[in-house]
Length: 239
Image (cartoon, rainbow, N blue to C red; front, side, top):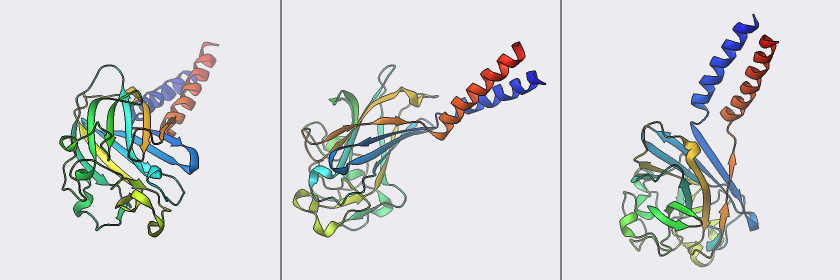
């Protein structure tokens, strides 16, 4: 009886192991109420990155606008190509008309081989002296200039009262979240290879950069719990 239960538990454990890495989420908090989340997932050979401003504050300055994310991939470099940058479901543009199909690629750039905050890969809506017009995702230029520059089309919060923004934060912004797709992952890519995730605010490298913390997903927590169950059943059988 115990031997059968152990086998069943082990099969469930293996199944969870295959699915627990379906996505990984990193979150950050910073001074003044800054908060963000970065979710990485895969779709075939694509890396999908969802960048969200989760802060509850009313943004009143450019340095509170979420404008980028940097990360590392361990185990050897990977050449990724830009596929799309789209408004996430439920997100919208404030201060400008809504882009056709939710396409905001003309305002966001991706580049590998960078060196910012210890990271080698980056997605950004500002140039920072690193990202240029040739690094943009597919899509029309929604707000001049054509190269990444300033916080325009950066990500604001759900609680942002756009009417009281000041300084550079008066430009068009994205409320809540953007989903980026990059192609070129090797088959069977392990999301556990992603680390060193840092989010950028404002339009300069000396403006806030917040490090992130990996959040255990429900699948990963279940995996750990099932692992304990298997170990316990094994001890009972051996005993």
